[in-house]
Length: 243
Image (cartoon, rainbow, N blue to C red; front, side, top):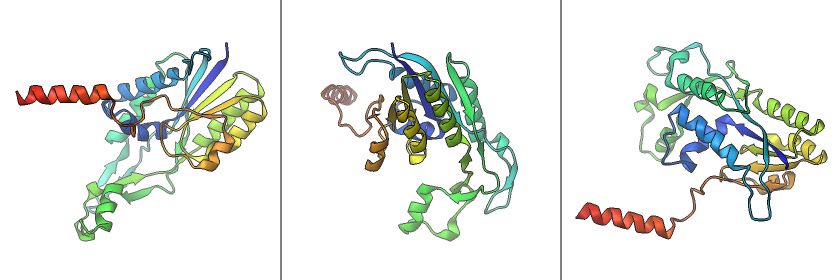
């Protein structure tokens, strides 16, 4: 039986969660963590009748602990403790939940405090550009404190290199959406490891396909049309409501 390692970019997974799991609570740490583990295990199942089930070596979950410093809001200049923010509690809880699952390794990088700053939320920026909002009307709630993660891509690369050189696995599945994995993917493939990318149905640049052995998302496609059964079920629910 082939051994498989699944590597999940936590920030990417959390960002894509609400798109591929619209019916699940994206702000419940236990739900998010459990879903991440279940999605990883789904990759172990055979893709077709001619395929065999893989044996799980380990699930690697990569993320960064939240910032804990105090900052001042951009409009009202109020002091805010990032350690007590909802996002900090949410992220910390996910990390704790992930460690409760068997064969899961938590790999933490860090957020760059030096370059961190307040940025306007994407939704608000869109409204500003379309003229639906005025710049003078901006409030503190229209901003989010953003810090770039560092060390995560390096840890993914180091783990892939170790797995490849020691021949610990036959296949690596990486849940991610950017090109930073390319050097590690090249190394793994040179060592004879099957390298699969799971972008969770996110768009992938065509040139990235030349650096992987396969592309596979095991979640439901959020862009797929509704099935006949779903349409029929909705029709039944609508009829009952009207009655």
